[in-house]
Image (cartoon, rainbow, N blue to C red; front, side):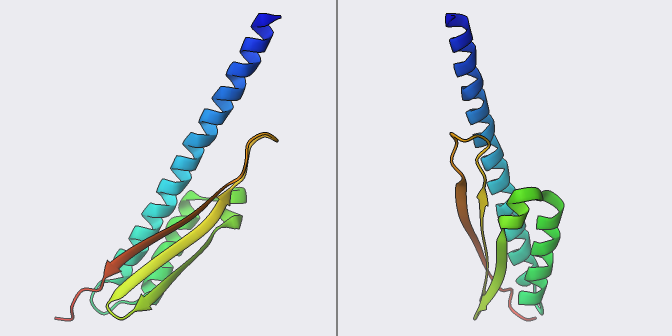
Length: 114
């Protein structure tokens, strides 16, 4: 009986650890896409449209399923600064694990015109 309880508890801990790893991957993938978007938008002569295009390209390649559907991402221009922001939810894998929300942002200063 003790072995069954210990094995069950170990499996719950493994699933929890796997969900934390999945959250870290998702956060890293979204942050990388945001940084790629702002880099594309800050090149001399580029703007928000290039940021949006690079951001959409990056996100389409790495995220899908429930996370991809919950994700909202956009680029904004404010003077010499381009900002990209994304928000979404990583759903819980079991009834006991909560959904984890995230809201990330990347900013970069536009290159000066030559």
